[in-house]
Length: 497
Image (cartoon, rainbow, N blue to C red; front, side, top):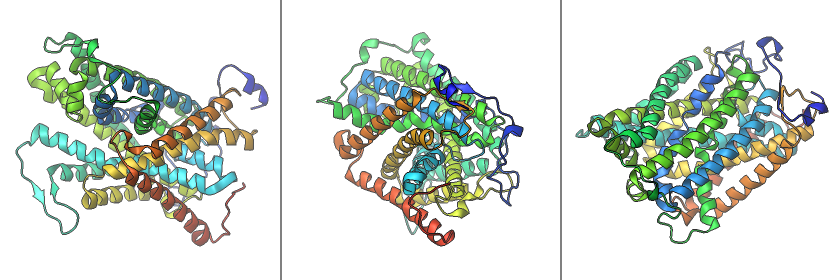
């Protein structure tokens, strides 16, 4: 594309077919044709349906602390940021249509010419943000299943190391293995299961949003929604720190970019999935908190930060409330499959770019990164057995995830400057460079305030921040090992093509 397209008011999208692509540089001996192109943009949106899990996990704590209107405003602004960022990622996805790994790869490609370790940090932080959510989601799913169907069980397995494994943990381990299996044997299988569970989730969300207005047992009152919550002093730092904590629940629609190499039409499908999923999540994050707060009240939600969804379904469905919990369980299944798929592709993509050990960049005979997926599974099972509730690690990984997103946004500006003539089937108008720069600076500000004031919300402390920084430093070690010992090359702090 020439500079003329930069001045157009609309995005330029060049239709792409398989024959238009460059040869797949991702091919290897395990799967000579590379990733299998079987997905449509609708499959990408189904995978993005994992994002309501973040809402379910954080709504109770957020609303109870800062009030419904404040929480809704934070989520709304974060979702708008996500929509803008997804437009940037759509252009970068069109630059690398045969690359797996999504924004972690874009961050590496953008920063490697300036300071290569930053790209490795972005990739590893992105992987940690997605992958370690498996442990927490598995335990919560196990708890939901136990309370709904096996409330009186006394199952417990004693281990010589770690802690005793009750039924929720056994269910969590089984769910992690199932998420691995559904991904390991081909992405189409995972997409098919995700469609079914996604349909259940949509039904559950509709009941949750419409039910309080039509059920005789529910009572919606807007007066129950406030701006304050239980926080005594509401200043800008409190709001920014809550934004820092909840941003991972809204930015995650970028996951659609991770499957670019597996879409039937990488350019068109990735663009549609990124934009439409961001709009979908914006609607969900505005409607669900509004209705739930008005139906239950902030006090009830704050006192029951985990069980408030069950209470809502009890008021809507009465004795059939268990039917409302099944869609929530379905949402956790989607989230675990997506986290496994995205984490594996992130590791694979950065390994193929030279940013981490090369063994993780191998595809299996089903056309998916089997070794990276298996690494995800083993690490998460170990976390469950050794650490029990891995909330601290999940919160620490939030720093890695937001750093990855921020570096990927900055990579947009760098790629426009360093590779101005590179093919971009999707090319945004030139003013998007300034939008990207503004988003980069805002995200940097949010991360800085968040890590310097971790105790303002009671959600974490200095220990979690230090752990998060330590996790990111592991990326530098693996990057150094790859460069020095596997590639046997001189350490290149700046990589030129």
